[in-house]
Length: 216
Image (cartoon, rainbow, N blue to C red; front, side):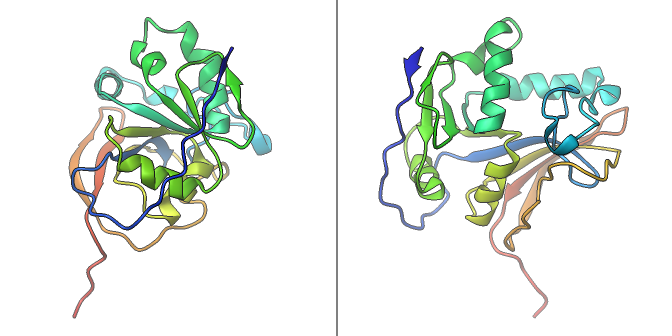
C-alpha cells in the first residue's frame, strides 16, 4: 500500500478556457439520463438498481472502436470515490486490455482515502471545485471523468466541464443515478463529432461553447 497525497489548495480565479487542461466527462447514458452500472449487474447496485449491464445488448465493432480510441488517448483520471473503488478492483487485473488506466494519475474525490495500492493516486478533499479549477491550470493531460455521478453534479454546478462525450443508448430505465440529477447551469455546447452505430447508439461529443444565446 502507498500513501495517497492530497491535491494542494491553490488560489483560483475565473480564467479563459484556451490552453487549459480540459475536464471531459465520458458516459454511457440512457434516453432518460441514467448512467448507473452500465457495464455489469453488480457494478453499482446502490438504491436497489436492478438493471446493471444494460449496455451489453448494444455492443458492436463500431462502438468498440470508439471506446478503444478514447482509451488510447493521453489522460489522467478524475473520479468519485465509488467509481474509483469499483475500478481499483477491476483494472489492475486487466492491464492487457487498458494499460493506460493503470499508469495514469488517478485523482479521487474523497474525504477518507489515505492509503491505496492502485498508484499513482492523488486525493482531492476540501473545496473540491476550487481544487479542480486549480488543477485545470496546471500542465498535464486532460482529465477524463467516467461514471462518478455525484462528482459530475459538482462539475456541472461550477462550470468545470469542457466536454461531454456521450454514448446515448436507445432505452429508458425509469430509475437510477442520472447524468443531470441536480440540474445544470445555462451553458451552450457545440457538437464536434457524432455518429449512430448499427445498433442505434448515438455517439456524440459536445464541446463547451460559451453562453446560451437567446432571441433579441
